[in-house]
Length: 475
Picture (cartoon, rainbow, N blue to C red):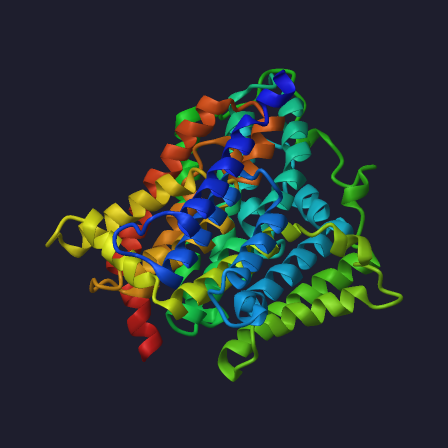
């Protein structure tokens, strides 16, 4: 009986999705909405329920969505129903995931972490060193989860060297860093992770073209400020000691060139991957000025790493990609194309007008819309998936205001990334919760702390910093 009970939420989601489809196809019109618009909105609602409750894998529900769009006659051809899969965003997701696997495959992340993060001096100094390295590694390893898994054993080793218990204040703060804050560091660069890539590509498609350098100008300083502020507040919250207990070993007592294999010199493949990443970054910077598509450098280094005789990437890495998220992105983009084509977004704008107080100032409208987005975000286990779903809706809903769409994009991605109240809301937080000393209450409280700081950083950036960048870019 308990076996069936654990599947009840998923089965319930499947039932709700089926009821929405049947009701949308056979039920009476609601609010005067009928015809193709009603069919598209029905498919959207049913698919959204499937993505949130996950009774079937993302890939299955995404393929079903595309098939329904075609089978129910919302578009003339199947190619129109699957148009989102031709987006560069889908391919960028794939190559970026492969780039992340290449770094992990050669152990470059472990090498960097072990070289520059060690248990020396005091817990407080180790936290500072750890925070700097988590932030720096975000510039070369585009996966918050991979970075988190890399640092977990190092954190545990440092904690043990202090003779501290498993639930020490140092270890709690360190797991907050690699769980909640580590994924946020990915927002500093357009190629820093899946969330940044999704935001950049959707901005390019819906707002205006955005270069790699422009992204860094707009997002790197706010991201660093957010990361540093949360680290300082977290340190005050946990009151990490500034000294080492008597008799505890420290990194200063160990030989930095000891037997640890991660402290050996860089190997051939590690140098190759490091050089490839450096070359890609140079191409992204140069491409911002000469018009090289952002996808091209990532594809080139993936091809390089896959060549015979190199062997950094192989078929097993392609199979290990999270194809569910890739399919979800393609299906959502397809849905958006169809919704735009049939005029379904007009209803979205009307719905926002009904929810937001009439005549309210723009900042109140933005606050209400972002608050609703945070609540919806809490139902998703993937922040990238939640952004892909919410961004077009929010952008259309705010289209009747005078707010700058680019600021909406940056503000929404920052706040959604910060809104992690439950362990399952973010894979990095889930792994940190599973392996570390934080319980569900800690995750919730730290999520509130991170979100509060993120809101402050977004307000400051929206009113002061981003307008300054606008003026600088325009010169």
